[in-house]
Length: 315
Length: 184
Image (cartoon, rainbow over all chains, first blue to last red; front, side, top):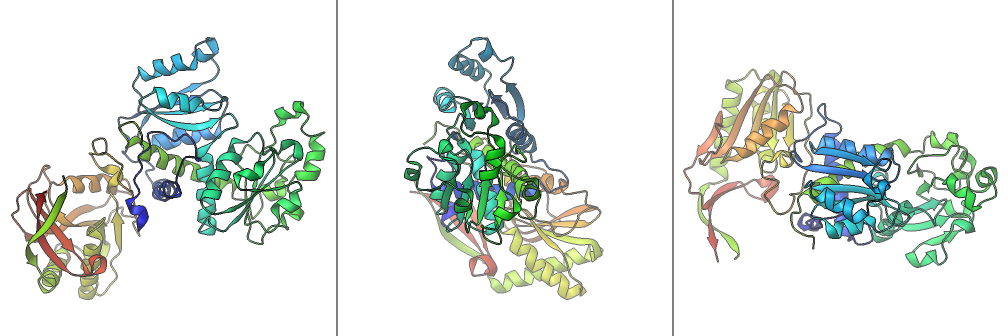
């Protein structure tokens, strides 16, 4: 098989945009092995023994941070967590200075979430350590897109040719951007749906179809991905009220009937029940939302494993 | 600097290999109460060996023998020195191995490092009653204090040589060849 010859040679995982389909497939295939590790009585392998991983979360995160932490521990890496509050950054240190100080501690890998797009890229250029982007502003969130793709592949057996609908705040979502890159590269058809106030102009240039009603967006979809309504953005007046948003774009069992009969329903979390999604579908038979969380660990183990083997500057 | 392998001698042909595997299966049965036997092949070429041994034992004893496979990549001791991470493949054990007699199977026993990794891997699945090692070829040059319990053939080799074991199932022919590494 051709994919046996694909070798991972990147020092960093900064986004999906720069990955080739073969590299994406290598990560997903590697994740398959690590899923099995999670099912053993002893859920730990010695692979990254003696490696140090820093988790820098300059932005709040529960799911992603704990998922990375578990992945690191299952690979026997030593990890250290920094969070936004109380960090030197808050005391006025520049990100570059923080980075150089971290470098001085000689970590092997750095996982970073930051509210500024490009922050991980800057670290990656400055540091010898491999850098994993765990979300940079509204730019990319590559491991989320990879775990979504892994979940889809496990249910549908493929990505190519599938119809995937992504519904919600398209403009401010890094999850959407990474997912669009990944899914279109792998040959899926992507439709994004949301209110016009949450839809970037010329989104079609990313190779997707735009829809402005929920029904139109999810019609005949194999996969429906609901996005969290970032309630903090309501101050921006993107929609008149939560009630109205739910009435127009909230997913319930009745509306989900527009999708294919064997549709799977996904959500990157955290969910706002009664805002973008009704409990009857979030907990219903089509939902694979909790599976996404489980697969997140396998996918992150795969990424940590692959990056830890690259010793020189990427390329 | 391209390294190529050129065949030097064929040390076992299909017929000899079949005879040896039959004898090895007999030795495994003789030395074990086979009711709790599990054969575990080390990927890649340990897997077809385990399969052939299991078939022989089933024929002799008349009851099914569970077989599993281990991929030892995640347990290697040289991951931080090689340039790219090797591709990991799945491990699979069909039954819980607690209190079973596990026979690890591999095609060639060389430095012993693969077996060390396989032992570490195996105990993550449980606590077997005992673990034995069966190899088709023992070529010497051990770097760890590890010995096989059942050996098909002992072959003295030099470190420049490569022992290439082929199986019908994976390579289209049953044979064992010694290859010479030459640098061009």
